[in-house]
Image 1 (cartoon, one colour):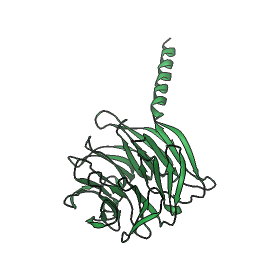
Image 2 (cartoon, one colour):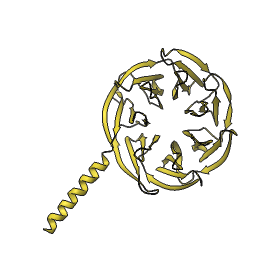
Image 3 (cartoon, one colour):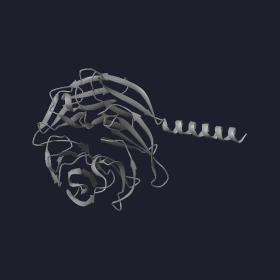
Image 4 (cartoon, helix red, strand yellow):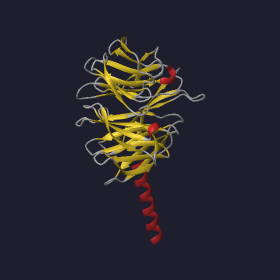
Amino acid sequence: MRAVTLSLLCCLALCLDAQESAALKLMKTIPLPAVKGRFDHIAADANGNRLFLAALGNNTLEVFDTGSAERVQRIGGLHKPTGAVYLPETDQIGVANGDDGTFKLFDGPSYQLAGNLRGLDDADNVRRDAKTQLIFVGYAEGALGIFDAAGRKRLGDIRLPAHPESFQLERDGNRIFVNVPDAKQIAVIDRQQRAVIARWPMEKFRANFPMALDEAGHRLFVGCRQPPRLVVFDTDAGTTVGDVEISGDTDDLFFDRRRNRLYLSCGEGFLDVIQRRDGDRYERITREPTRGGARTCFYSAELDRLFLAVPQRDWHGAKLRIYQPE
């Protein structure tokens, strides 16, 4: 009788684990024939049901209708497109190009070129300040370029000690948190002063590339590659309060406030889901197999969908996967 009871308890535990680990449901896969090379970053127009994928290796911006889950447009003639941003006031799409150092603007309805700013060598991540509508572009050996809300005028730079990777802006505060892996630090910027006001060292966990912010919870999440860890900072104290193992070669990281979860796309070939428990306890609950090099993802809270760009490998074509978080 005792053996039967133990067996039932084990089965129940396995069932609960299986339910908990089913954090993502694959809704659709969109084939991307003739798209070669790696992807970089994604942006969204949630109200217009559009997704913009920077196909860096293909020198194109791939545009998708998230309602019909179909690709609807391709913008060509780019030069290693890296970051993308949607400007709702003007219905335009901004694209940073790392090869020719440009920030190009495209008209939303027609997708025709509407603007072209130069002088951004190795342009990378792009963010838009929801309060001021200013646009920030990470570029060169160490700077954030600042542009007006229309993306047509350069207003200045914020200097950094090395090339910036992912950065996050507070919505209610004035700070910008910037990953600067070559300097082994996170730079904290006051965007009113337009200056670095603090530097948080990254010595134990290095190669800090992706980043996500829980502003209300005062937590900053940083994905590191050496070794592969998710590191959690208290944004008030500037100190680490937790870390957890993740898959290798991570490049995108998003926080799902609704479920208190984090999604990390990792070039090792996995999509990791990290669950935050009580306090600062973190647990990897899903390690979804993807494909080597699939390290570009995007979570939209408005659409409640997770998008993963999977690059072409050997005879396997490129694709965009759409997941429903469970």
